[in-house]
Length: 252
Ligand SMILES: [Zn+2]
Image (cartoon, rainbow, N blue to C red; front, side, top):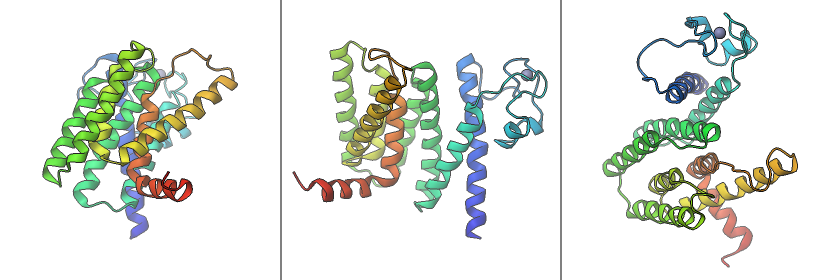
């Protein structure tokens, strides 16, 4: 029974991931999310049921469109798997039912931010604002803790200072709004764990890209994907991380 539930949650995650790909594509094209069937971006052939099964269709068609044989972006199966995996984690950590559904919705929005910023160096306002409003509503109807509000203001303020000092070279206004969301969602001190993780992972990947010659020292790397990654890790493991940190380094 337990295994079956995990399987269902994972499959729902794959399906939601497939929907997120569609939302991302339509945001890129400026189309409405709700109207019309999915089609191949290359030949615009309408996709049938067999083309739309998450991950399975991609493997079955060996990553090519059935109609024009053009390559399908790896983004499609990766986002589906990522969403499935994150839904599994949310289920595994046994949040309350309300929290469970809230986190599913928030993680869907965060995954859009992750992919969109990675591809376009842009954090879509609509998505971040939706997530902020949703989090506010959730906090009001659960236990509103003030530390969430001032964590939001603190991180957004900190990012805003970086934006102003660097004249938007190191960070953009999208990161400021995302910072507000992170603080509101995570509260204190989890938000600090998320920020440190984002900087740490960003530094490692940045150095890796420079070593591999993919990016120069001065080239832009979007920070949003790292912030989202840090947020997800903090959402699940902030307590462990903070305990580990203090056990390891003491209370210096
Ligand atoms: Zn096609």
